[in-house]
Image (cartoon, rainbow, N blue to C red):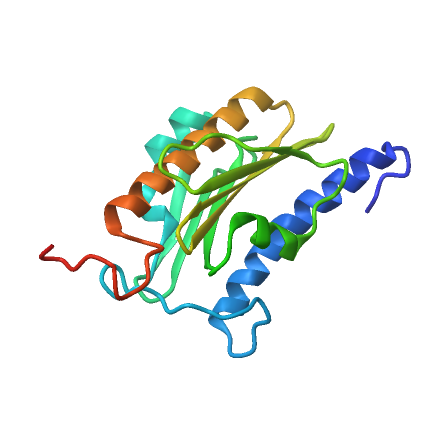
Length: 204
């Protein structure tokens, strides 16, 4: 329920940050469906891997080091990958999840699919090896929302962090940059985001 006493710009920023995460997930669903409207859908590279999972680049030790959260990793199965880091209920630690989308355009074009709130706190960090990256921050009185986007070729990965108060915004943003860098290194090492015809084979 919207707090009528919350400043309007905070309410708009929070709605946009939530919409960014939801649309990112929606774009992922569209890429996997039959009638998505995000343009031509490139095929997933088959070598390697047949299915991509951002969690292959992240683990609980990384999440604890970067965000100070002791979590359980939920990464789904090889045929139904998932990526969530869930803290113990009532711990007050942040929740982290990640997903991906294959998209043939640029991050600017990907961004236009979501629409950008004029008052959103959008940052453009330099992530070594990545084509482009952005971080959206919405600091509320009760929770901090941080969403990171990173492009590596056709692979777009999205990381969402929700941290209840009291939170450390500077640490959360620093940790998000580290997460985007880890995802980029893993993508580069595996040739992810390249067209299937140019993806490296296991023997290359």
